[in-house]
Each structure stands twice: as C-alpha cells, then as structure tokens.
Image (cartoon, rainbow, N blue to C red; front, top):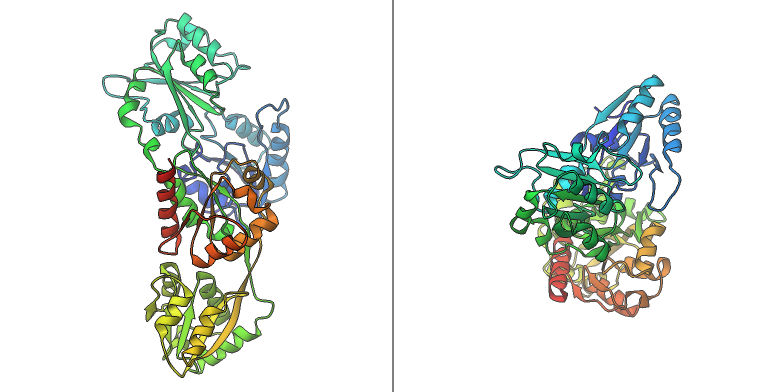
Length: 501
C-alpha cells in the first residue's frame, strides 16, 4: 500500500548502502508527498522519491551546535495536517538511537496517524560489512548496543560490561578514549579485541583494528572520520577471514556518474555493488526536440510501410519513438515489413519492450558500425536520434544508396548537478569520472570547470565518439568501454582501478 494523505511514515534507510532499505521503505519513498531526511541517508535514495515531492534536509552536520530537530518536528505536524503524506527517512533504524521514539510520541500526542518501517541498524550491518559477526557460536552469545556520544551519559561502567560478550558503540569517535577507559574500569580486559569502522557499508568504509586499550589512540592517529561504529569483543578476531566487503575491487574509489539521474540507476548499482562510492553528477537531461513534427511525420510514413530499415542508436531514441507512437495511436505493427538495426544490448532491450526484435545488432556497438552492416540498398532508412549527432552514420548510408530520414527524436540539454557534487570534483575528491556521451564531456567544461580539473583524475569513456569529444576538450581518457555500454563501462573502470592500484 502506498503512502496515504495525512500520514507520517518513520522509515529506516539503513546504515549507508542504499540497497539495504526495505521494500516497504522504497514503496513509501516513491509515493509520498514530503521527504524529511538525515545526513547519513544515502543520496541515491532521494532519487527514488516521486517527481515533485518536497525534499527537506533536517539532519545535523558535524560541528553544528544547533539541531534541526525543531524544524523537523514542525514539519512532521504541519505537513500531514495539510493533507500531505510524509516520509521521515532516518539512517539505520528509527528506534535505535534515532529519536524515532520521540518523533512517534510527538505524532501520537498530535493525533497524527503514523507507521514505523524498521530499518537495518548500523549496530549489526556495519560490523557485518567489516567481517565481524556480533554473535558467533563459541565466541559470543550476546551483544549490547550503546551510544558513545560524549554528551550522553550512559549507565555506570559495571552495567556496561555485565552479561554482554560483544559491545557495539554507535556515534562514539569523539568520546572513544573516555568510553574505553570506563569499560576497562568496569572490568573489561584491556587486551580485548576492538575495531572501529568509519562509513560502514559504503565505498568510503575504513576499519582500524586494535584492542580496548589501544583503539582510541589508533583511531586518533589514523584520523578515522565520523560516523564510526566500534565493536569490542573476541568476535573481532574473525575479521581477518570474514572481511568480504573490503575485497571488492572498487572499495575506496570515488566515481562520478554523469548520466541523467533517471537513467543512471543501473550504472550506479553496479558500481556500488563493486564497492565504489558514487557521486551523482548529472551533466545532461533528456528533453524532447524543439518540434515534434518531423518525428510525427516519420511515424506516419512508418505506418504506411515507407521504410525498409529503422536504425536505433540509443535507448532514448527508442523511448522517444514509443511516446510518439502511443500519442498517434500506433503500435508495433507499424514496423511490419521494416527491418530494425540496434546499437548495443541496452537499445535491443528497449526495443524488446515494444515487442520488437532487431534484425541487426551492431558490432562494435556504434552507429557507424550499424550503418556499415546495413550495407548497400536503394530504399529508405529512418534514423531517429539525438540533436547534433555525428554526420558519419547518415553519410555512410547515403553513400551506400539509401534515402535517409535523419530525424531529431530528443535533445541532450545541460543538467543540474548538485553544488556539493560539483564541489567534490573541483576539490579533487573524485578519483574516477565517467563520460557517457559527447554532451556530458562538453557540459563538464561548462558546468563544472576546465579540463585541467581532470589532470590527475582517471577518465573512462563509454565509446569512441565520447572519447573523441574528450580529446577535443584536452581531456585524457584512460580507457574506452568495450563493448560500448554500461557493462563495458563498468569493466573498463574495474580494469583501470586494478591497474592503477
């Protein structure tokens, strides 16, 4: 069931990896009117909100002396009273040191209906991603979760240590030395294994291992950043054999994805699955042509059987044609008698959704290769594609005897990347930048800065045309995807990252 007007949903977003949110949480996020989110919520999760939703940051950033909780509380009351559905998106689980209980009490006292959607707590997930089970047969039959915040007075030391084989400290970097001393005073062994994990479950994950007596000093020496989770107990000794996440090839790598937000999901998921931290840098957006008349006229000609071939060089071209077919009340039968050429597996898949199977899939995955594969002929070819596309494919077809209707199906227009993402590129915090079209290259220079920003950055391109555009801007490309699709791009990134260490 989707979000209901006037309701508030306290949703656990998980500890950082966007894949750890629950199915129910995603459903609500995609249907609600308002999203109130914290600092530790994965930015990519906000892309799951429905178009037009009000998205408000109500978290607290490091170093802030004030809290946005007052703002959050006000919105939790006023928005549902105005008939809007609200998702309060919280890192981890709402009821594990997340003030979810306080917010639920506020809603209850305000007679506002609410639902709690539990999330995966960092107390369990972060140690798991570091290869540390909080319980283990023969080593730990119990664990306790404590807040390590300096401003929070926890129970007396003896209460912290009695009965628990494993201790998990959340949010305790600043007060770790004090907390460790209290635990030792309460009876914990100074030599007991301990590990501190920063940014757990994300591509920025870092782990420091020591013992209870040394862990605070090691964290300080290695400048381990917040947020961090600390695990104390013999189970830390299992990490050496169980540290699965840190074996992923892109862990510690920060990759900028320049595709449009709505089309970046597959690439982002694959990169994050390999351990990368992904920075969304949408340098283009997809827009319709300045006029639909040429494409609509082509669809009429297609329905009349006037084309011998239709060549699709991108998913966007397929999607644009599909939209206009539907508006014209025409379906896949318009392609009867027309052979179809596709560039790449993704374009072929998009055509399959229309019930169309390409007669020709270009190899390599370029429009020039597709035009060459069509060969000589005297009929008519429909070529729906992006405005400003290279001249080579239609020129090659015409030289082979074909009449070509080169029709603009869509435009790449400048995107609107977040300033925070742009700043990370300008500050050299991104090690790998991907370019997926000529427009992403040109818009990088326009929206982000000069090519010199990429001097010490690994640049990976999706295909030859994009690589040529980068060269024209003075940008060195470390690798070009082969095949020229998302899968090939990911393989190229992994190959370069492995080679450069």
